[in-house]
Every structure is written in structure tokens, then in C-alpha cells.
Image 1 (cartoon, rainbow, N blue to C red):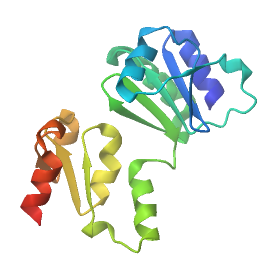
Image 2: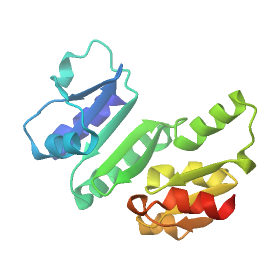
Image 3: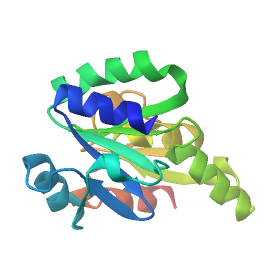
Length: 175
């Protein structure tokens, strides 16, 4: 899978990030995409030629570019990898590629099972498409006002934005 993603990245000249063992890898630290992401997440990338990995087992791959370019490679990824990966947009310029068995909903479900808690009594808050599965499976799937429009249209609950205390406001209303 990772070899295919690297091939697609290079062929289309689209920036690819790979994550392995808590490290963020890029092939070019000086491009705008790396700087853009670095400024959003506050950590620094490790520059590495992707041909030099001894193992291609990655926890996540992330393409960064303009949405129109990402939609083009999303189509190509779906054609080449069909149903073996999970694709989601975590922001306008971020296309995440994960193992088909991985998403925030499945992770939350596992955590709740470990704690002997049920999904119907759980609240989850989200503002991006990578939150969709998590929001759909809990009793209180709350979408933030600043969320992407397609996430808001299917929301069970809506609250104010992240920057305007939306989580607090929802909890005060429901408790």
C-alpha cells in the first residue's frame, strides 16, 4: 500500500507525509506543505528518502495539497487500492489514508469497551470528516459550528465553534 502511495505522490507531484513509530517523515522539509502542516501541529518532520525505509509499515499516510489536486489522487487511490484503505479528509488540504480497519469510531468503541462504558451514553465532538464514524456511533455525536458543511448536514447535535467554547456550551445544556 505504501509503495503505491509513494508512486502516486511522485507521479502527481503531491506532497506525502508518512508516520511510523511516532515519527513524521517527509521527503522535502522545505516545501510549503511541510511548513503548513508543521505550523498546524507544532512538531518537526524528519526528512528521508522514502526509498530508504527498511520497513514500510506505517500508521498513517497523509497527502497535503489544494483540495482539487487531492480529489484527483483520491480517485486514483480508490482505483488502485479499492477497499483496502480508509480515506478521509481531516481538513480542507489534508487527505488521510489509513488501514481499512482504522477510524476514530472504531478506536473510541475499543476504549469504551475497555472501560465498560456504552456508546449510547457517550458524547463525542468533531469538526472534520475524519470524525464522521465516531460521531455516528455515539449517543451524543456533536458537530462544532466551524465544522465542514457535509459533516454538519448529518449531525445529531450542533454546538458553537471550538473557539467559542462549543464543547462547554453543549455539556452545560445537556447536564
